[in-house]
Length: 319
Image 1 (cartoon, helix red, strand yellow):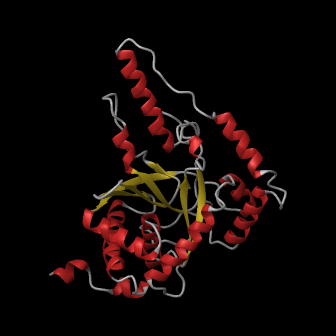
Image 2 (image 1 turned 180 degrees about the vertical axis):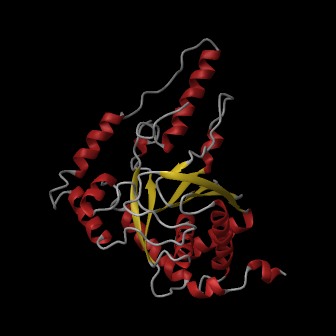
């Protein structure tokens, strides 16, 4: 099955496959599928979203207030942070898409547990810890201390939308501040505040934010994408399976994606990189450094970013 993301988002896959399993099981027995009517349809959602946001040009509307937040938050944001690259950065505006490579790596069960412990101790989440570690890594590789890191939000803020197939997702920009050589714990607190504030204003469509702030239409240069690994467990019935397939292109310069399991176990991750800027060798080096950094921050979150980058490697500690 091939579906365009403007019609079917990632969170639609589970209810869609569940419907297919139901239909396949029923038809194999000579019966019609016994689906229950959905409480709302996509048109209901579209109408509700339009009414809830109101006129974006009205500063007193919900959408107007959220848009004002994004104007303030993203004012003066660097458009092209200078991440150290393998080759010269092309002149002119960045293309909407560019050739992309994919490097897979895994947070083993022990590291996953350490990240969970740090998240619980700091009142954060796995997403925030992994996001903060990526920000620290980017700063360490010359991208600066004012980082536009985007993420995708499901947009299904009402339980009635859970079983609906359609496009609800939105992009939000998390302006991440690593200035002042903070400790990782302090950086994590900054990321927590930034993330929660952004999620409270996630309803404005990203294209409206682009028009209001001058962000590049292709989206942020860096992304962190969180997936629910539990999706694959729900595709039962023997009619198919769910797997990520690299497309060979990317909109962002660097994207960290990770699949969070329901409970214990490894966390499968991927680093998608623009191959005209970062070759496979450099991308693999970044994943190794990222894993090393996670080991350090989960052990010594009180250390500053400069201390974390100059600490002996875990391999040296264990030698």
